[in-house]
Image (cartoon, rainbow, N blue to C red):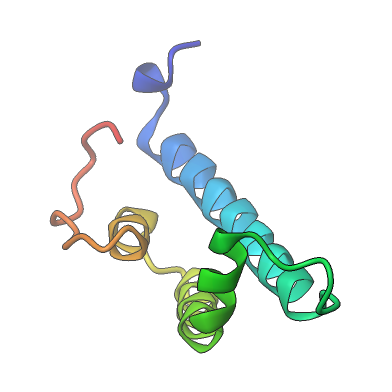
Length: 93
């Protein structure tokens, strides 16, 4: 079945699951980098992530709170991507 033909509720549920998976993966990767031994050195992306750990955890907390509160996923997703969300509609995602 093509996602474009999914009912709006199913599309939002799928995006919610994607956001949860992305959130869990982000926290898992960051905690792995934070607990890594000093040798061998972290990759450049790992160092950049560790340098912004507080910002990443704040983003994770905000996203988690929004999802727990039932915030429309069409609002949450663009915000995590650094974009202003479009007004919610029942158009395809």
